[in-house]
Image (cartoon, rainbow, N blue to C red):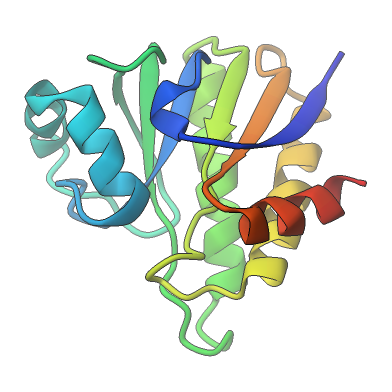
Length: 167
């Protein structure tokens, strides 16, 4: 059964085939979830990411999971919010879609996402949640391998916004 669910927790501890990292375009670690994933995965992740020489906003790259329970880490730089007139909605949808496409290519059945771009990149949370759930739901309709997507929310406010979108 294809399914999207929402939990509150720490994405570095989720036992899935792939977790998605809300990366920056350098892929070299940063603050928020990006920094937490880099710390938890260990120094080998930095070396693996270095080989990509960055990643454009909305695209995605995949590495091993290293010290995480997940087999893979999919890195996607989400858009910085500039008021909504710079293609932010499409770039955010691309981040989710391209991450799922990489998961599919690597035969991942279970994927966990954080709320991409809603932290320091200031994307409005309700708008981001709507785009995320719509993009994931659309992708799952034709997916062959990915059949379980979990939104892992760091706090109650984010959890509530995503819960509202799936009910």
